[in-house]
Length: 390
Image 1 (spheres, rainbow, N blue to C red):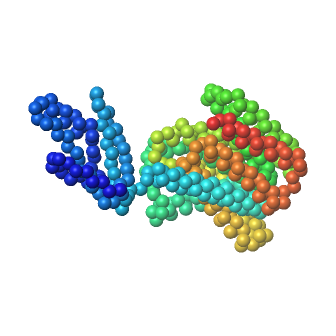
Image 2: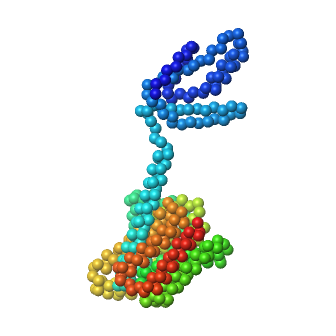
Image 3: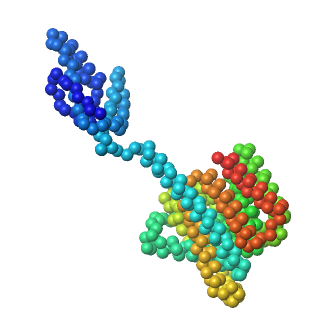
């Protein structure tokens, strides 16, 4: 666009990026006319001359008493600026891709952990030591990451560790109970029972904390409880210790979540560093109990038996289940930093489906149709629960 306007009075040349206010010019002209009515009225006409196209980059309005001023800004075509709307769209797309990668990684790592964990427990039925090794491996990995500056070292104080203590106690109980359960029953059965965790969450919140929930939330508990009960009754390899371990794990993780919400408000340690601190404190809590319940003599005898039966490959199984346990929990906490609790709950439900299906395929777990129906009903109830809570 080429503009050229002549003016009867000399005025300074304006570039394409100068602001123009027509109202101000007219007001100034009228004021001069009222002071000198005998003089001819001269309305200056400003000249704007550019040889390149102009693009409007922003329009802003400044409101003042009794009048308003509108300012237009322009820039030449070869000096164009990025469009903000496009940047926001790209940023949102990148965030969705990031969350998708987190979810896929979370589910894949969890499936791998459950497979190796079950293999270890089949050959080495010592869940207390297995749980301890998982926490120890994760703690060692994070200490190395902090020492080599791969990860930023968290800034903690005594108050932080005090608020973390009840969370770590609940996490330790839940972790050991789940491992005990998987040492006695099929992986699929443990995760079917653990899909009933929302029912424990609602009951504990209602009875101990006095919280109330909408009617749809209570109704969603019916298929959860009914589906878990149906799956338990029809389980071919039912074991009371395995069943109670999964139930205790549900209850412990509910308290862990409650303590986390109460104790970690306003704290700066989050994501993988938060879980690293949680693992280290849980390791300190669990180690003396593991020694008291099982002990080094039992571990040594069991280790020799497992290595003689499986071979050196058994050592790889132990290392893999320990590493993947930490990684999948670490990624889950990183995911929680990026998404809402509702989305996290739905992702957790889908994770259980992937674990149940993959474990049935890999371990050739016999499943009756009525048992599969119970599992499907329980998982559907969990999904309805997550929808009802939003």
